[in-house]
Image 1 (cartoon, rainbow, N blue to C red):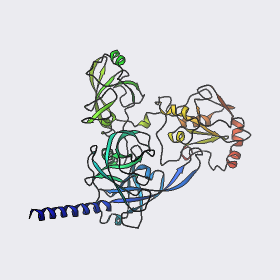
Image 2 (cartoon, rainbow, N blue to C red; image 1 turned 45 degrees about the vertical axis):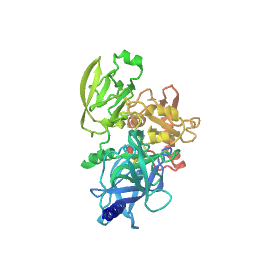
Image 3 (cartoon, one colour; image 1 turned 90 degrees about the vertical axis):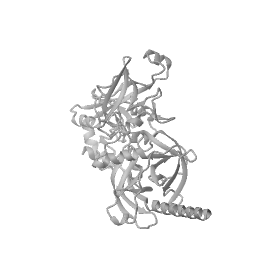
Image 4 (cartoon, one colour; image 1 turned 180 degrees about the vertical axis):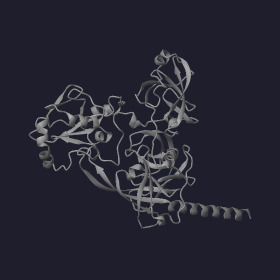
Length: 478
């Protein structure tokens, strides 16, 4: 009798598992995206590209996927597991920071018979996961099994920003992007990227980042993940610790720089030592224990909060312990001189007598190897009140007006007619409004490019026509 009962229970569990897997598969979606890809070296032009990715139907009638699956999209179609019909979809919300997006399908027939997937909790190391999606190598649904290898902060390739990520050993390939990683039937992460030079090292956007994103966009507006706007230094050196009077029982990070518009401006000071964030002890290497024996960057505590929330911190100032509170107001784009990677917009530019100017962006730096080391320096610099954006002479279109200067390209500009400028629009306005005969552009070393203003105006249309350029400036400047 016991054997019969055991066999019946075993059979019931097998049937239940098969049913659960089928329900899960019904919620997996293949995404077909047509994108308009900007050319940052020739910012007036672009190309079209078709690609595929994966997604999952979640509550509310949304499809959860990666931002990079639908970045720069012009047209999106989605297809459910086991069906051949494609439905038109649109982007409802996107976080290029966290590489997440929500798609919406207006045709209700698309969701017929689907049980939306739900969310679990941040998994443990060695926890088993199943990754679903539509990777290269076939056109039907793929499922790969693996375990969680580690959980720590990692650079998100799509944005270049650093957030918590889950490393897994499940096989992940192009096309898997945006697909769900499930454990016990619930989403614990979204497939994000792989290390191509390795074997079976893939990364997921963890479920806590996904939940933050979903709460953020409930009001129809994406605010993002906050940046406190200060730089820190590790406190591992014994001489440095002694200088600040720290005993062996105190750990933290030294605040060595604060941006002019930081969330903590007027609350923190340079020379303060950050010892706790939201109750988490900050270690000398800048990590916090988010679980027993597991450490990651102290921004783990900050990323749990929404923009506009207040966060409590503990510091040591002048060898005295203090508690402070700061409101989260800004993202990293509000702090850094070079904006994070841009999507869904065409690059800004303008042409003046064959000289092509553009703001310095990470897209531009990544688009060429030319002068990359020098320009990458700007990417790590903070904004200042008088300098919020860097500008480059992108290239010089060869003509009798510009001859001798054709070698200039990706050249950072510091001054125009001896004056500095705040950002690209300020630079553009100064170029347009100058009444001087010559426009003198200068870099930090004093190297100059001289433009004859009257000659540039005379030659402008001829040069544009020669290079088949329709507009002399981007849409945002017209």
